[in-house]
Each structure stands twice: as structure tokens, then as C-alpha cells.
Length: 439
Image (cartoon, rainbow, N blue to C red):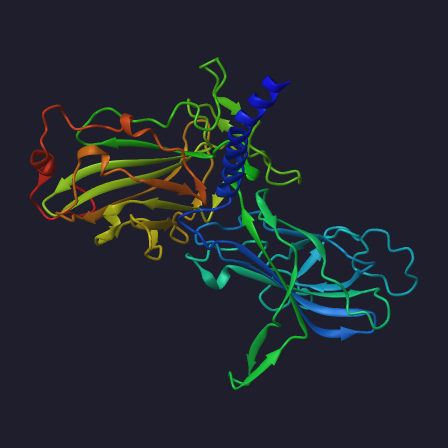
């Protein structure tokens, strides 16, 4: 027994360390170092009392810099703390009415204990709309379009006891549009204040409940959804996405179509299956390719290509985030919109997205071709740091639609030819003329 006790005491510190490491890993998965303050905030503002309940405005704010709610849109759910019902709604609707047989005259909009709320479409009738509503459940990323990064709806809640002010709903859930979000409890906070009469008068609601929802890629999917490949003008070798980046393909290499069983469906509705992808060695639905095209006296040129290997899924309003020190200098982007994320990182971070009516949709793959969008970019050199040596010219980190993409290992990056010195590397493929869009 003494021997067992000694062994237990000896192993206990290591077990404790292991538990802490696992817990930290789970927490860190919800934390994005490139968007440390990102979250979706849900606010319930009670602005009018009723005989048996209240009227409230519910607002969903997307404060993620580069994560957006795509089609088919967000779904918000909760559990009523008492016996509440939803008498009516504007700007959104409950997906189920439930059993309202106990109401003889006025019939509630929903009597479900755990309602699920979805947004109305932009072409809804005016009598069903409210202010800042009806965007089909879409929420733009904050850094791309803050004016469309939020959505609101009005809800009339009743069936409370007389003189009861109600209790905050419990167990708030959010799908935007799929899994991955975890919401805290709705808490009483300082009532929301808005401005009226041209900003000369402050108007305060009666009560405000507020919570934040954070995203975890671990909850959303068991495997990554994108990967990165690299190539250069000075090395004919292409560094492909890491093998099995997003799962492994079947042994039969002749198979063209694969099913990604570990990639969860974004909706329970009967829609096109997003799991059907073109068979590849990396098995990622999306690949981002970084190609170093050419070298000039004081500039260098890169081509960025995003490829969609899904057979049935189209990515609307996609975005790509790239972290690279070269973005500290003036950069010209030819075929994408772009912006720089706020300073505060060791290496600058650039966000790219499509141009309306040109390439905002990343189309699906067909039998004879893959769907892709691309742009060239011209970057000014910082002569104190620029080099083609040691992989400096490749991205440090890359995200597609807010999901971190699997990067190749540094020792697989395309390298300079043997015997190339740093000064020689700077002059490789040197083009003396002024750079333009095409060479």
C-alpha cells in the first residue's frame, strides 16, 4: 500500500498539469489572436409594458472582424423561464407555433417553450417588417460592412402573471448559420439609451438584457475546412496543401467525388449537401494558393487564388485574411476589395473580399472545372526586411471565412536555388520596367 501511495503522489502533479493543458487548449480554441475582441452580442431591450407582458426589441450585433453569417442565415433560440408565449413578432418569426389550444380568442404567434427565431427576407411585406430587420439572416463582418453587421426584430411577450415584469430567457443558442457558437446567460445591464430630436434628447428603454456568443472551430467541425499551397517563380516545385489536411481520401485514386463525413451540415433543412467535394489528397473544401510571380527593383508581385472544391456549395460574400509583414508597405490589389485590420500585431493583417457583381460569389466545382477567384497584388519592398530567403515571402497565417487554414510546414516551403546568396535573391527575376497589371 505504501508503494501505491508513493506512486500516486508522484503522478498526481503530472495529471494536474495534463488537465490544465487540456482545459487551456479548449479555451484557446475560442480565442482568436487576430480578432481578440470578436463576438456576437445579443441584446433584449424592453421598451413597453403590457397587461400580461412586455414589448422588446432584440438586436444581434456581429462584432467579428472577418467572420460573417452566411446563407441560410442566423437562428436564435432560448428557453422561457416561466410560461411566456409570443403574441406577435415583426422583423422575424418563430419556426413553430406549438400547442396554443388553451387560448380561445386571441391566438399567440408561438406557444413553444423553446422557440427558434429566424430572420425575414428583404422582400417581406411592410406590415411584417421592423427597423433594421429582414436581411435573410445575413450578418456582414464588422471590418467589411459595419452597417450590415447587425439585425433587429420586435417581439411581444405575454401570458405572465399580473404585475410580473418577466424573467430573462434561459439557455440562449445561436446558429450563424451552423454550429460553433456558445452564448453566456442573459444578464441585466444598464438600459440602452438612444438619441431623439436630432440628438438633443436621450431616450432610455425600461430594461436591457445582454449576452455575448463566441465561436469555436472545434465545436463547429471536427476537421479544418481549408488549406494553403505555395509556389514561386524561382522554384518549379509547388508546395501542395499538407496531406490529409481536412481528412483523408479513399484508397481508390480514380474516384472523382468524395463525401466529407466529418464536416457537419450547416442546417437541418433539405438543401444541397455541402459535404460532397472533389477528391484531393488534402480533402479540403477550399484551398488558398499563394504564388510569388515576379520581382522588381522596389516592388514584388503575388497572385492569390481561392478555389472551391465543393460540388454543391457556393460561398457568398466570402473573405480571406492573410497575415504577412509585407503588408506594412503600400500594396495595390487589382481584383479584390481589401482593408487592413487595426494595428497591434507583430505582422500586418490584410482582409480581402469580392467586388460586388464581379466576384463576391465563389462558385462550386463542376465536373470539368473548379470554382475559383483570384487577384494579383503589387507590394512595395521594405529594403530593410524584404528577402526571398527562409520563407519570408510566404504568409504567416491565413483564414477563409474566419476559419484558420492548414499551412504547409516551413521545411516544405519552396526554396531558393542552391548557392543563392541574399543579395542574389533580391535581384532574382529582376524586371527593370515599371510594374503593371500584366507583364
